[in-house]
Image 1 (cartoon, chains in turn blue, orange):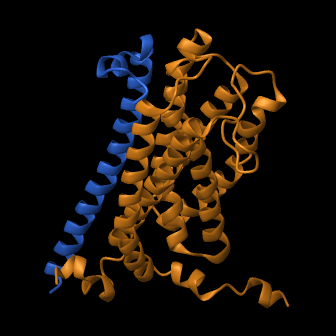
Image 2 (cartoon, rainbow over the protein chains, first blue to last red):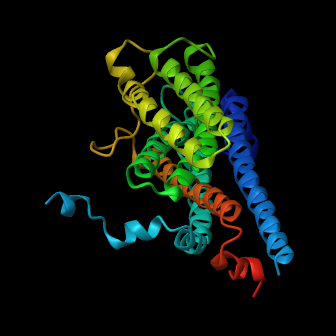
Length: 56
Length: 254
């Protein structure tokens, strides 16, 4: 590891708040996108199954 | 002669079939999910903890490993959306319009990430979160274009007409992409030039450059994954009465 300790990794010589908030945003927004796509897919699957049941 | 130019290969026509796309897309999805997870985790751990600090910017340069992939993807996704829209317009493929629609939210997300992480990076580097620099302003215009495409797509209830209108706006909007790319050369800007090109040798050492390559590739895989998921969802929504879907194992569970 480039840093001497986990504390130094967290602090990043004073740049920690900038770096960690950027990574947090990247992950939060991309996870939100995947979660939304997945929940829409599950909803559509449920509706398609209900359609098939109604028409059987 | 004209006919031979416009005759497309078999796989191209297959891609236009909702049934084929649903099945093939479903088999690709887990691989793209795995690739996105591995590449992003590998690139980010390497970039955050193992890459050396920049001699000028110190540790704030590590923001590059999320900012640059987001910025590259924000433009690539817009181009991809315009190409899918053009395919839909030219060959009248419904699936192509669905793919274009699937690009909107993920493209807008990458643009928001690029703008926000760029603003955060700007503070320790330039001393300001925002400057009306050509690169930043043209990227903000890109976000407005995504918002316009999204609003237009949702405002029209008839899916085919919405697809056509979205495609035209996306094609016209691509004029902004070369403006973003060359803004750092055409105008005097605070923003640095490209950290990453396909044609030139990287100016950074491999320890700094390779994590970036991994996060860019991982972001592309994540984009493909989300587009596959959203396109398959639209196929489920629009094909619910068809016999192939009623007999598909996703619906029957067998």
